[in-house]
Image 1 (cartoon, rainbow, N blue to C red):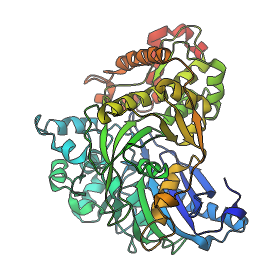
Image 2: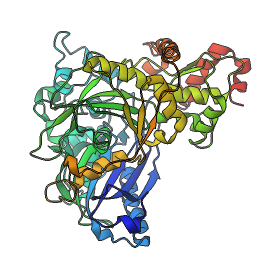
Image 3: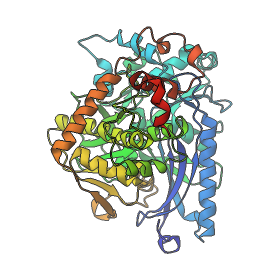
Image 4: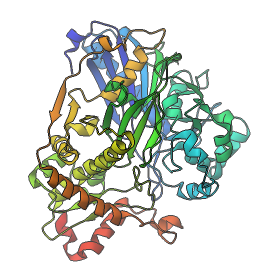
Length: 554
């Protein structure tokens, strides 16, 4: 972080980064792109039943206000005038679905998180309605029919929550992804709040036509979603409204990007063919395809990358999505309790130096790209009596890298031109063991920004560049150079290939765990109180025998 007394010479821009695990507010100097100050609040996740993941929208909103207030306190302590904050950008976890009462301002149900699996039966029912020779859902949205996206979550809420049904019937309900909920609330809520979203978030709902850049009536009819509850779609960079309360009252909110699009902008991947990988709760590899919509033949998504102004062109991206990346570290911490904090994973992995033939497939929410296999579940295999928690920690980091390799291979096949290097960002990139493993497994250089907050930077850039704000230039000659750290492959390509082939064998073994007769497909009540770790550890017991399982975690 820059010395704030030296850095605070130009207009400042704030960025809300609302993620799955935490909320952050960060303030940048718009002339130098230097991060001056930030504050972070960790969030609660709720797991009411096996495979369900929820969050409290009010807790999320309160965390935004808290982060803004604490960041501004730190700026004042550093003798920086907060009136220099000229705009605020919002970046958010995508797909997570909120529906609320526009008269009371209260959520009608918890936010259904992107990782949530409760809609699998809804997906199966809907998939039977799509003609085999005319997958109009994918051709219009660029997305496969999956539990991942907002439309099926919204359909579940309409089918299963009487409060939601009643509010829709009475015209009181509003739907949105997290960005919509935040912007509506921050700009006044029941007192004139702006109900909007941007093209990047809209493109993750499965209700948005990525060709016409509008909500699509045929899609809404297919999912039976009333169009009057949908937010207005704006570009990613324009003034949506002003803060109506809090320490930054009166400051315009003028940038909005889904978190992975924000990271693409923050990495300055503005040229066709440039790509970045973000390591957060999940792992997301995006490649800018410019104004072309490239439809994948290898399990990737076609999505809107950004539209940086009302009159600016829209750019698209190919995306590979991995559900579980940083979340596997949190699982090892919270469920198996082999570490007390996430940073200890690097120490354990360093101590092992290898997984010793242990492979971990963290398919806790099924497998996303390139498989889109909802029946998969997490497994740890290749265990022996020698295996200990250090090897499992190493295998968990390798799993993140192997999943990235699968996506990169798919992207190279779709684009036809292999990437020569990979730009990376996200909290996990502070783990040097992970970054070296990634370079070894991909067998190309991995390039990490020294300033890891590229998602926040992207949101700030979009906000500062908005017409009417105009404090951040996105012209190539004006973009600040970013210091990079480079990780080169250190193993032979043949060794990398052997390890990768063994990983793919493990992936095959993870599939088909959820069947029509399994508890998840029927009444889950008897299992609802059991942690996810129960099912994974049960698998481990079947593999190696109960009498040695305790030795793994000592």
